[in-house]
Length: 113
Image (cartoon, rainbow, N blue to C red; front, side, top):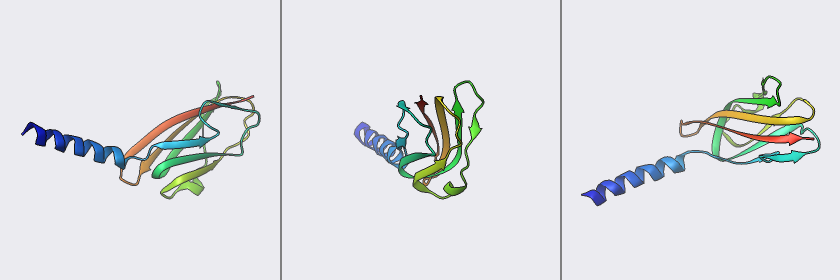
């Protein structure tokens, strides 16, 4: 009986883990140091996700919501234009909805010298 219960729990956990859409890569890469401000951010997810909010903060300046007009669909790759804000340490915080209905969020950062 314990084996059956354990198998069910492991099966449900594995299904839930597969259903999510983790962020696989970004450009600029997380924790990278670059010499020029990029014109856009690139977020690559394992599965499709619809971004609902992306906020960019530069050092001690207030965060700004980035324009997601071109990213309203469920996609695995999102390109988001960014305004020129100069050098500094940037934090990108994102929120979205996975195709499976799960709310997702995360962050990454980079520096512009």
